[in-house]
Image (cartoon, rainbow, N blue to C red; front, side, top):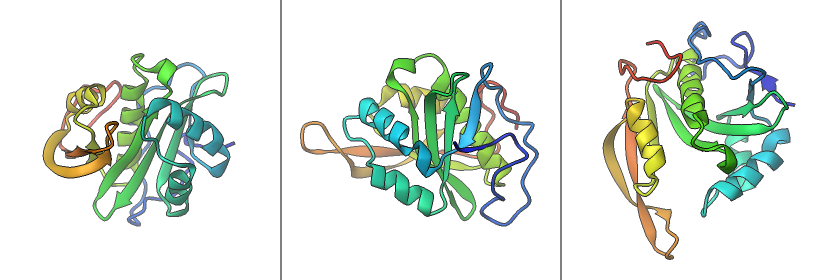
Length: 189
């Protein structure tokens, strides 16, 4: 089982600052649990990843992220089933969202929005309120979610992702600054 992230547990911020108060997190569904991802979660994580994407992260990608000290988050329901996860990488003065995934059968039910809100809250708790991410232009659902949360496009990485046709797809680079006010449930600036 992973470590619960109830605001009083978890690791200190990567930049050495004291952790911010945890009262700014979105509310979880009844019985829901936000936990720190561990190696014990990876079988479930990889199963969801493979169902969710045509070009999924490998188990090694997740293992390497955890070994490197990246922040893995899991969101479980009252029955303990993994619903969503995210990988955050602290980088000097901002947080990089490397992966945010919702189990395919649970998509379009607000869990992506909830997990993004939780990721932003954890980022603030680590005194890294600015967030950066890459997303495929073809992932219109994710783009809509990120734009609604106040992310703006700041660049493009040409040929960043493998594409279904054997070619490459660009990545849009999006950023959300600390001062951005967005309509994520439970979020405060």
